[in-house]
Image 1 (tube, rainbow, N blue to C red):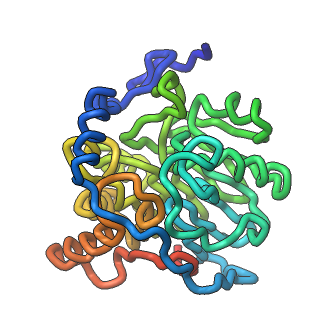
Image 2: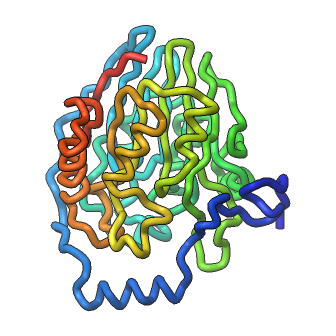
Image 3: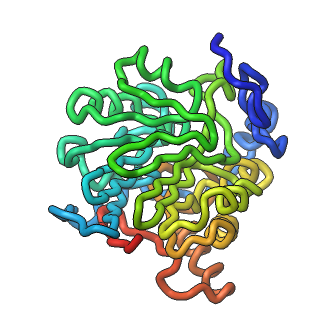
Length: 323
């Protein structure tokens, strides 16, 4: 078993959240499953229509980033001279072999073969709705990007044909095309099977250009790490923040933010603009398909957040932001 530096989030072998909040027990998981069998979960449609045809920009001006929402936590970020893909998931199911687990309701905005040049792929952690091994293998063969992941994933990925991989601990960085890519903390956990809980790290990524920064929060519950990120790295021009997979709160709160938490994170990191993610693609938890976006709008109105400061993107839409 590999060993890692001992820190406030690693005992040398296994990773944990500094807050002490960890994944729920299997007993809690079974309790939640029983609640679902009794009808606690809202029904989702079998499918939803595809978004508008994607029209990627040919060029991006200095000081700008073009952000295309492909679905769930997958974004294409186009900077001048650098294309970045976050948590690329194109599978029909969020589970083993891309065939088991929750079925994809909303198709990805682009097929893999429609992707442009991809220079860097950011992987926040190894859960099936964030790490699609089939898509990563395709990208490694057809686009040959640099993969950047948290500690523990390099050997696992490279043994499965996904290479080259740079792995980072929290606050470590990798330099690519005049962009500093920094792994940031998140409050979450990892596993692909019942036997590998927390053997690899989880996190987000901060992309610092000479004009400004973009923050991809990964998958996270609300926590003090958002304040720590701002303290260390400043405030981003744009944050990509999760708003879905949050019910029931007694089970999901440590690992997934609800819309109110996401607005708290928006303010905690001092983001100029934020885009929502992690909603409307896979039925992972008990809330309805439209609830995250509807609840976010209520929270934004109640807190009098200026229009456009925190937006729910349409799958397939490209947004341009000044850095």
